[in-house]
Length: 228
Image (cartoon, rainbow, N blue to C red; front, side, top):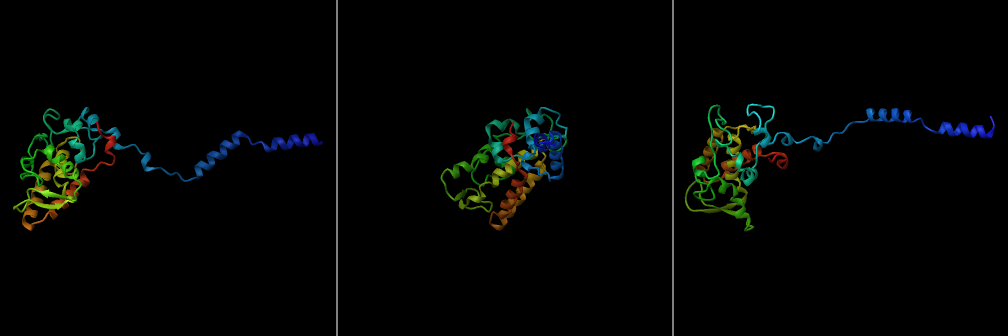
């Protein structure tokens, strides 16, 4: 083989067959571990929004939405999802029973006691009450109606969400499209029992514990994706 032929042979051998490259690449992918990011999974709410679910058959359990937070229920754009006859005629958490809950309903009517932080509060006002306290940038809030009676007292602002989470729990339980672990009656009974314990013991421990339970039920992983 002359020098020129030897150079041509070397040049050809140094070029890799594109088909061989493809086969090697596929082998490498097949042998490598596959890492799936949790964030890559589509949010449940993006397919099962309240508006989308309400437009379908309420008895279709293939698409159930998660509990919503107090912030969701107090949003003016979401008031249309409060359980009332114009939204869900003839439906409720108990078969055959309609639970009608309106923003203008009194907290005391719904739960059997005044809001901890004010008297004659409607549900929508009690939901939104925290913003009035936090505007003043204080670490304490005034307990207008202590369960144990007596004059108003100041308590840690960590208790501010007790009433708000209870209202959200009530609305979640009343909605026929929210996959909630409690019924309306159970939500009210738990609140009244905890309130009674607080009245007996002279502290907010029982209601604070219940607030944490409700908060867990009322939490949606990514509520930005499930708004109507």
